[in-house]
Image (cartoon, rainbow, N blue to C red; front, side):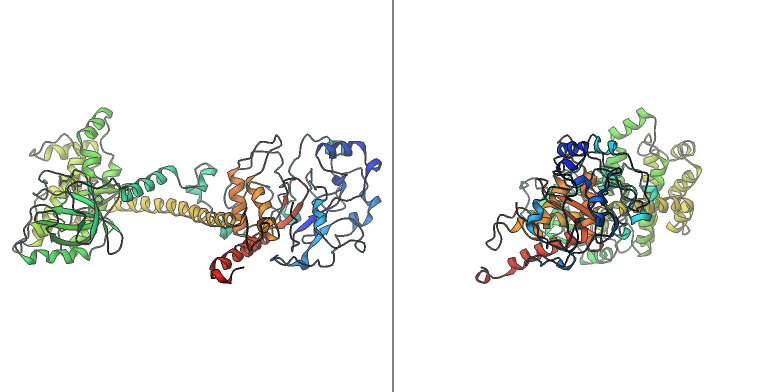
Length: 636
Ligand SMILES: Nc1ncnc2c1ncn2[C@@H]1O[C@H](COP(=O)(O)OP(=O)(O)OP(=O)(O)O)[C@@H](O)[C@H]1O
């Protein structure tokens, strides 16, 4: 086994030789043998220079000071600085080791110390003061069935987290479920972490199981995956479609590739997903088949629509005519909203209507108000810009994500049905009427086309609130100069606050999830660095590179994180331990928390601070990175 480097704050713990052979009480010898801890190291008193606290004390009833007075009374002596190994990034001046031996006679630390029997503390240390009296009798120590991770001192005693391993105020971790020993990780010495480095869920969004709080919630993850698939999935070459249209390529039909004449556009109007060669983004291309431009001025509205960027409107990017489809087509390019549906698909298909009838549940009023407010918001922006939506139809309102709606297909009728003689005010009045009909169709799925809306309003008055009935009645009322979107917003007033509240609460949830993902991203970067370093077969002609120097610490750390075993020898797959540890390491530049790393053969034991492991990673990764940048001839 390769020797670790001597490093600052890496204390190599060596068992005392205070009691040996016949001197050791029988019980203790038996216990030590059972634990594969050679000699009588459990009597050893190991003191750490940095914090002046002891991990380990002689058990009661055994007078360690008789054999080694210095160990019990004096703080750990500081050895003279050991020379650093050339590649260690750590400060050799702080290298020390713990032994109760007289400091004058202590040899300089060396690799041979790593072969010393492993030091495995076996009982909690709750008080390091000499006044401590409430210690268990020796029989309890030696008859302990298995290793019990020590309970760290209270914060007052050593600024150590009282909850012990597996807990963290910031991350709300689950406790570790195993009480067996971690291979090489028995001592959860902790200092308070920098809380700003951890994402704490807000109380009102922290209702999930703690482990789930590490990761993005399932429904959100599924939604994001579905969007990615809808954006990037390649179903192969679509027959009959050109390979390129203007600056767009890789066309994939959305919906019916050969639609009949659209109810809204009065032309066949297929829509395609396509990639832009200009910016690489994905767009939705609406093609109006058989369109012949008769008046250049018809395109004037396109520029006005291009200026409108609104959360409830599908953004229009550009429009052009083309013969790429072997006909005269108008193509209007929109933002692509992957895996979206429409209000018609969601609520007005015969299946959806049947489902509602069977369950006796109409479309919930909460959802209807949300749609009302979002559409009103969009229309306010459109009308304020001196435009009219003209396509407010259930098939042309996209639902993207959770309840977000966007008016789709804006600008198409401005080109198709260009009419410079009609005042935009009339089109805006049409918008309000279409708006009312859309809401009416959602509330009353029994209404037949052409049927008077009075029956619908009656039903709304019974099944929904009077506010909604009043609003729909207003929208469906006769056009007048006073009928405006502003009045609609006034009628919806109090409900707007509910919507605002819902949006902001959802925003909190998403920000919280984002925070967890930011940490996961940092952990992923850390793992990548460790992956570059650990088990590297050879570097700079040195096959032992990843096993020696700072890298040895990283190897032990990797084992500490991932390769722990329980007392029964079974692998411990404790995700909270992995994430806690890696998060601490990521915050490691400032963390003086110590952990104990023990080699697989239990012959080496290192006590290191997270910041030192951090330095080891930075140093080893830095070596790799500078070597990777060297020109070939400059390398050995
Ligand atoms: N901008 C867009 N981004 C992503 N998907 C879109 C976009 N616009 C439309 N879609 C998808 O394309 C599907 C078809 O839309 P389209 O407007 O052609 O519906 P339709 O019911 O076939 O309309 P029509 O009866 O007018 O032909 C929609 O259901 C929607 O899922």
